[in-house]
Amino acid sequence: MQDLAILFRGNNLRRLLGGLGVTLKLSLVSVALSIALGLVVGALMTLKNPVLKAFFRLWLETVRIVPQLVLLFLVYFGLAKAFNLQISGETAAVAVFTFWGAGEMGDLVRGAITSIPVHQRESSAALGLTRAQCWRFVLLPQAARRLVPQAINLTTRMIKTTSLVMLIGVVEVLKVGSQIIDAARYDAPQGAIWVYAAVFFLYFIACWPISLAAGRLEKKWS
Amino acid sequence: MNDKPILEVRHLRKHFDGTGVLEDVSFAMREGEVIVVVGPSGCGKSTLLRCINGLERPDGGEILLDGARIDGAADLVKVRRQVGMVFQSYDLFPHMDVMGNLTLGPVQALKQPRAQVEAEAEKALARVGLADRAHALPRQLSGGQKQRVALVRAMLMHPRLLLLDEITAALDPEMVREVLNVVLDLARDGMTMLIVTHEMRFAEAVADRVIFLEGGSVLEDAPPARFFHAPETDRARQFLASFEFDAVRQPPKD
Ligand SMILES: Nc1ncnc2c1ncn2[C@@H]1O[C@H](COP(=O)(O)OP(=O)(O)O)[C@@H](O)[C@H]1O
Ligand SMILES: [Mg+2]
Image (tube, rainbow over all chains, first blue to last red; front, top):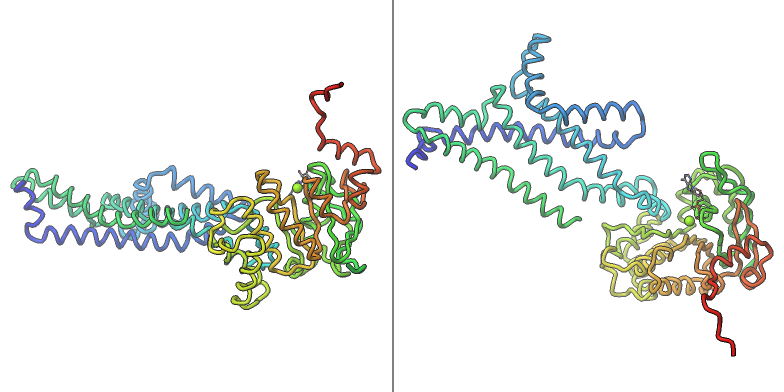
């Protein structure tokens, strides 16, 4: 139990929180980009153009089949090797997470739009609404009610997955965690458990309010 | 009732992927007239109604509303503001309460002041027995209540012509009557209506004329008394017979 103290030794706690800060920054930038791009991508996904369809299919299959970790290595080390292009770990992480998030978000948007029954469009047309009015008052509000809880769910998944970036050397919460553990290997051998507990706790407080909000919205709008 | 045709359909033709649904459909209807369209399932009744308010594009022929061509009209939106339609499925907007459903068209499409539309909507709801449901969501209503709201929603647009496509077909039998009573009420008020229904007793009660659609064209066009009791074609006789049941047991002889 006294090994718990390594959390409070020196500036360890500040370093852990700083790590969480980097994580959240990476996540939030990727999430914001993914949502913005995903809205456009999702609208394009509803089009019937066969070339676009094949392209989006390939994109989605890629991000679903290839693990994010592999994508990270490919972008971070692969780009450096293939084109002698050295990008920062943070850039690589944002690029990979946005590539993933925009694809998934696009698919959620597509699903939300296409799940609205045709007769919703037809009965609003029969009421004399213009196409734009039909989207604004009938189709988009219904799509949004479906989309928002799912988008929040995707956001929490993205935040959790950012823990992977420590494997390419981006300083963030897990990396700080293992540094603290290493430094304290001899004088606090049980420290690891407390450090990981703290890391778990930090991720929990970052994701829990978000998934709580998602659950509420889902109940309210279903 | 005056004699000016409000709607004229001339030689209307509509094919889907090469198979003909409507081959040559012609009829005209006067202001205030109620026409019931009957015919076997799949004969193109819905297609006919959908062509009239521009949800389907005809392949041939003409449709005129108040003497002006509306088929392939550039301004379908304007046409639909004059031609109301209620469908078989419950097509209320699920994210809006009853009042929201009722005011959307008049406020957004016709740019009427919201307060005025709401006052009118409240009166109309009371008339169909739903005065206390103005703030209910569609999912809190029964099927019959939803269709009454859908009828009110169409009527608040003050259409020249109202198209009803099997509006009771998805309802439990005990709810059919409350919906059809509203339609009978509209007919008494002089609303011009083109109605597709499988409720033959209702058709007989509400119709000024019955149109029998079969094989892509109008086989009979007659007042209900004649169509239901002395149809001219064998097809119509067979169709009407499909609504009858033969008694299983013979009546006792004594
Ligand atoms: N959008 C469509 N695409 C292809 N076929 C259709 C379409 N709409 C209707 N049909 C076909 O046209 C025929 C007539 O349909 P419909 O007008 O719905 O008949 P009814 O309302 O008299 O039962 C049916 O055989 C139906 O399968
Ligand atoms: Mg039909």
